Image 1 (cartoon, rainbow, N blue to C red):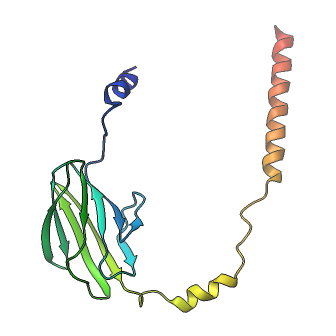
Image 2: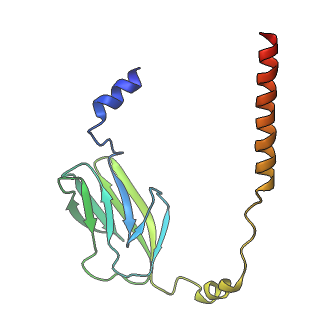
Length: 154
């Protein structure tokens, strides 16, 4: 009952985790906080959410800049100039929370020959539906059988 009461009380409010990164260079993070991200752009835009108006410290390879979340808690940061191709140490800090990862930039970090040669391969079969149908039929039969025995005992 307490949970139901909390749902009613908080129905109109957004209860966020407080601070997270939602995209790296236009790629949705899907809530995943990975230790390594890749992007072909040398000037990627980072987007995230925080407490409305919160200060966020952005650090890329030891160079820091401070930004602020807007009144909705959204924040956006794009480096002022292009970064060099290769690995970069990136961190975002707000209050007591820090998001840090390695960011690899550029097109030379992908083996495009391997990517191109994979197009002709066929994908393996994911599964078959026959076991699912058989198990569903057996389950239904057992439910009907159980109902029949239950009615006899009454």
